[in-house]
Amino acid sequence: MKKRKPTLRYRFTVSLIIYTSIILVLWSGYHLITHQAVSRSERENAILAADSLLRQISAEFTQMNTIASIIAGSGLVQDFMMEENNDLYYEKAATVSEIIRRIAFPISAADSVITISENGKFFRFSGGISNSSIHTLAETFQGAGRVYTVIELDDKLFFCHSTPVIDYSGQNPVRKGNVIILTGLERIRRMLGYGDDVDRAVVIDGVVILSNNPTLESFTVDVIERYYGVVSSAPITGTSLTVVAAIPADLLFPQRILFFILAFTTLGLLLGGIMLLYRDQSNHMIMPMTNIIKHVRRISGDKQGRLPETNQYEFDELVADINEMLDRIEEYNEALGIERQKVFDTELIRKNMRISLLASQMDAHFVVNTLKNIKRLSDLNDTEKAGEMAEGLAAILKHQHSGDALVNIFDDFQILEKYVDIMNTKFENKFHVEYEVDDKLETYKMPGLILQPIVENALSHGLQNKEFDARMMIKGYLQGGKIVFEISDNGCGISPEKLSEIQENLIIAELSDFPSPGLRGVALSNIQRRIHIRFGQGYGIGITSILGEGTTVTVTLPVILDGES
Image (tube, rainbow, N blue to C red; front, side, top):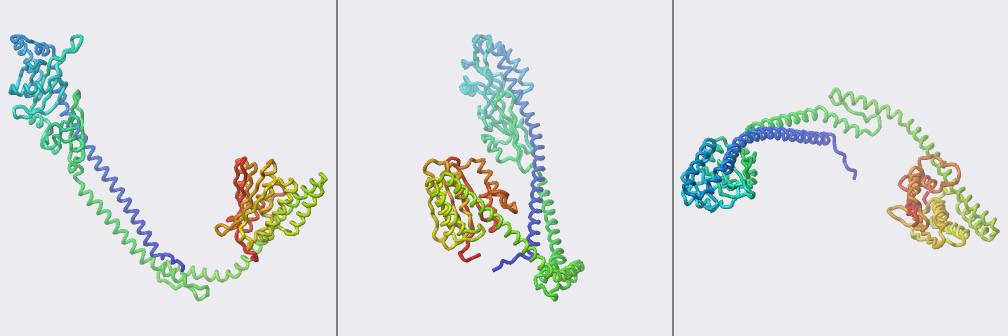
């Protein structure tokens, strides 16, 4: 059953759907790019604002760290912490207290400053921390380096900044204790800021230790990054602390809903315009054209099969032109048929001439080579072998007067065996040739002088110089609706360069209208031309070879039953 082709309306509808899909893809891409650009701009602005805020907070903590380092590095403080005489200890404590009062309290957020000597002796310079809590601090930070943590003392949470006091004046550094600065957690939270919807936190080792939003404390930074739109961070100089600002996603791009409304309104207008276009084109173009096509298909070629008018001005002009064209076609049809027959006859004559020339050249090539061999044996006074070759040549010529004739495949193989016998007579039976031919080929035909030149090449060029075990296999079988012959030898093979040249010559063999002059080097190209001219490029010769191992030539021919022409 013949498959029905799609109608014009169907193709128009499909084209419109594809066009609409492309529009939707472009609109989606534009919408996505625009949305991402606006979102990126909002995020960049938010990051800039967060970075500015982080720099202020970082400056506060950096200042606190600097003050602690100045106090810990003071020689007076180190001397005071190592004093064992109580009177001198308290006298020096007054001096250190004045240093701390002038350095720390005017500019820092410290609630308490405490020194704890390495031997556990402490001095409270400010704040109301109990002695038991101070003993807890001494046990916690004894021997520790610089520490930042949140600690509970006297039922109150403090941010603790512990700095080791080390004397580097001697040959070896000597640890003398710790300077501990305590700041109430609520005070730190106020310093981090409130009321602007931006959560800020202080992080150490990836964990939040304090924040203006207490719910974030003890969370990791990875968790915060998953639930906030923008997370910006900045390290606090000279410390292991990082300050983080987290901005909720709903604060970014607040005009998002308005943006979506505008985008989808544009999409609706676009789709509405496409629908109006479809309706207009369908009524004023597709339907009239469909009617014209229906009537064109009904035309049988007689003068009554003409198109009716459509009542559409532009299409009625087309109808008139088509009807006029049909009249002219009928007038020219007979003359055109005559000219076409002339061209066909001319081309057929030309094709037959090419086949005849190629076949005659192949006959001459075979006869000349055989006569040369007979003359050579005569010169050697080997009249018996020369007679055998002459008798074989006569039988071959009697069987095959022209390479253009179609011959029975088994008959052609009998002549091929006679040729091999001639060659074995010439070379004293050095060649061992095996035949493996499918019995089904007995009912098929092939052009003459196809296999003999290939076998001749294999014997003369592939096996002639082989001292012993010169073998050849000739196969014939059916494959994929074609007849295939394989001629394989175990001779010297062909170099890759020469093989490439031969294969290229086979590819271009059919480009020449007539064979090359002379009789040398024409066998494979001649056969390729004959097969292509007679049967087309679906058939022909293929050749493979490995240098030093042998060569295989494959011939593919169409199936022609004996009795067909």
